[in-house]
Image (tube, rainbow, N blue to C red):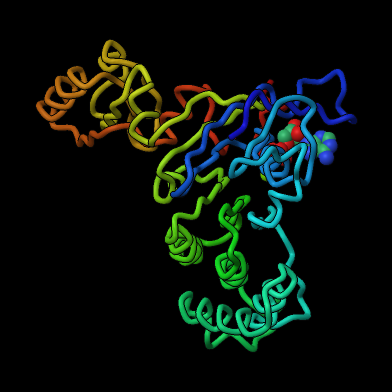
Amino acid sequence: MTEGVTKQYPKNVGRPPALDGVSLSIRPGGIYGLIGPNGAGKTTIIRICSTQLLPTAGTVTILGHDAIADPRSVRTRIAVIPQESRPLYFLNVDELVYLYLKMRGMDRAESRRRTNAVLEELGLVEERKRLVSRLSGGMRRRAMVAMVLASDAEVLFLDEPTTGLDPLARREVWGAIRRTIRDHRTVILTTHYLDEAEQLASRIALLDRGKVLLEGTADDLRARVRRPYRVTVDSRVPRTELERYGDVTDVDGGHLVFTRESDARELALKALGAGARVSMGPVSLEDVFLQVVGRPIDDGTTGEEAA
Ligand SMILES: Nc1ncnc2c1ncn2[C@@H]1O[C@H](COP(=O)(O)OP(=O)(O)O)[C@@H](O)[C@H]1O
Ligand SMILES: [Mg+2]
């Protein structure tokens, strides 16, 4: 779908490009997760794929069309919810969805039918007359998902659809997003919440400083790290005894060890023998990120600052 996409923003000439040879092959159907910290290039790649921004180099093919040479053929078949988008606040929920469909060229009867159906489906019937400006953050994102879901777009781009929402509201938005995968539509979702990618996406690309570092299913990503197991033990076991098993990090009340499967078992038995509390399991995507990139995904720095 993208091949060697590079973007150097004119303002930033002389600095590393925002995207540096990004090649993604996204198969139709399902949810594809683009994960990465702030500044990784997620929004830039979404804007390029959705024909809003031209790359400096590279090609983008969407549904068989060249998105750079022939953006018009692509636009009618995609829908985008931009990052931190502000829907038209003077509209109510019903109008937001209905007018969006009308704007996309759908006739009145079909727009009305689809609006009713989607509000029903996403549990927004009681909110339909409420102004978008009066909705909670979670409800507003759901209304926006409803809007693109009701359209006939085959590829949906959602740029950080749950950023800033509380955990409950995030789950409600996830529920709405999951419904988009009926009808073999393709969703490309960016997030810096790795649990979100794991919950929703069938394949994931890990982006950092404009480059794809890993790509595959969540399990593929886990399998790519050298130490795919995590063992936490409380501080009854001294750190020095842990170091021969793998990489040790101090965490609240104990230590976290990234290790190989056989070592994980041995370490867990030993720690249990010493009367320590132990938990053990495969690494999370957060751990994968930490091991591959060398810093936590949400440590507050951007790729640029850390560079
Ligand atoms: N319009 C712009 N002009 C100049 N630089 C930009 C612009 N938009 C983004 N960038 C830079 O490009 C890089 C990637 O940004 P972005 O795509 O927004 O990342 P993400 O969405 O992953 O946070 C960052 O270094 C950012 O500062
Ligand atoms: Mg972004």
